[in-house]
Image (cartoon, rainbow, N blue to C red; front, side, top):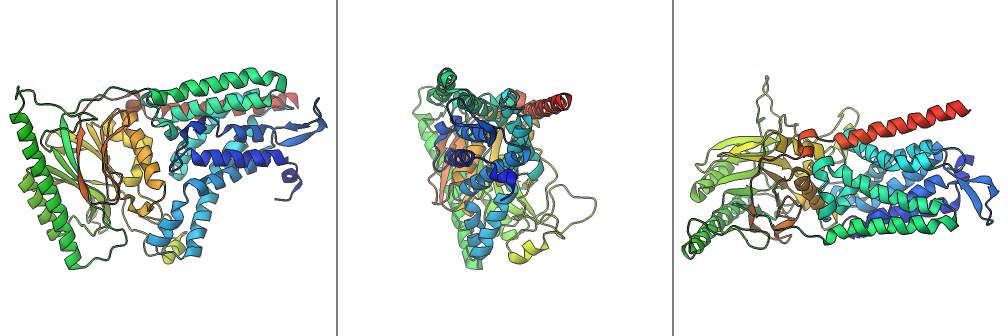
Length: 558
């Protein structure tokens, strides 16, 4: 850290990195200052392109600063990444300490190592941007390449480490005008737009002061126009189906006895059956008082659908609900027979939904589908498990992690993302953490899912901003695939989300309740649903071309 290249980094570059990191943190929940996303990365870009003294003063007497060398660029970006993850994913400490069984020092160590690891991606961006910079103060290629480089790095974060938490485009999930481009490009297209404006702002500060005002005004105007999309509404979407989303509100750290288990199961089944009965009675009353019984009113974002309940959804749960437990199976079968309704429930699968060639005794994080006649007819096993939470990657290498906490699960990966058929309705069910993977969720819609269903246990996040961050990422999946999405969670946010990403109905957190959630079915697929992350891959290819162009130019001029 005290080597000559590091000491060459001008103090202003470090200050800009700190400013940029702070802005990057507050654009995500809970602060949620989304408008700052248009400027959050500009200081970092300026820091990377004005890093080290060139040995001569500028005309106005200030220090002449040039772009960072590759090692300097990596370090500046890496520091920003470490601090950004600490500021947005701080909840990992509480999760590991309160629920993972780690002592406070080890939980802090886990958070620190997490930040060191994933901060490498910010470092990679800094490295690549410095490589794209030209000799002297020729930053044209670097500025043009910056949005492509950022999206390429986000793609790498998704595919390599499997933790695409808080992709930049998610910050504009409420911007209906802008977010609709995700039906073509996925969330990466919004990330690109945000970085494009940040580059324009940064470019204004890299110009001589006399030429700065015009570009600054233009970039501010672009940011204002794009941000104004948050003020643009969209018409309410009609709905013709209704789900009952049961928010269990079970403590993650609950101690289970036979009495506690029986009581909880009874309360949840009673809640489900009575809510369905109440809704059906309400629907009958509304229809009887409607002039035309052939055309009963349909629900919309401001009016709850009065039709009968088509689906009951129980979330992923910390309760010991096993698919092979007769008590659990019988209780839910009886509930579906009484309510005459399809039911999806989170549970622990004791055998794979698709039997392998050889028998297995491993466990699965599953979603089971039960018919109105009480038959358990289908199951989805979670494909993308949480490393160090639901399974231990490379057990021989990370055996120490299993020794630190006994809370690391031993789940097996599922083998299929096929929708489940609920009497002719195809349900695209994915569980908790899977909602942050754009390319994986879109597979359900591409394979025929008519509505998306996310089962989650956000109780692990406590009162941190993680639950709101998770909700925003889930909402983006609805927009990308132009699908209604039912989000059923243990402690919140339990909600019905329309294809514009709006939460049209939701429950307060931390209470046991059932939400009557309107939704509609669709079989239309978006360009993104059909073709996946083509835009992100295109950005990766363009980034590679830009870096090769710079490399060849340097060799030619050397």
